[in-house]
Image (cartoon, rainbow, N blue to C red; front, side):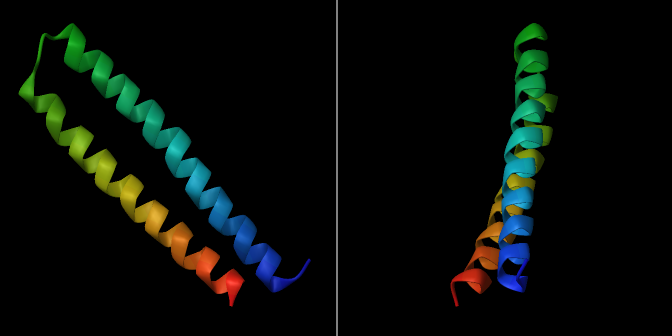
Length: 69
């Protein structure tokens, strides 16, 4: 396996792990939000999760950029 292929696989792992775990976390937060009839305290974890997912997508994007060079 070449270095480029390894970096690409790491980028894909970061991207899909972020999407799966972040999506599950957002679903669980949404369930709590709905079941507690609109608790504003559930908004903070949603924002934090969204920011972390965006950071992970950015990291994956940068790693994929190294592969295309």
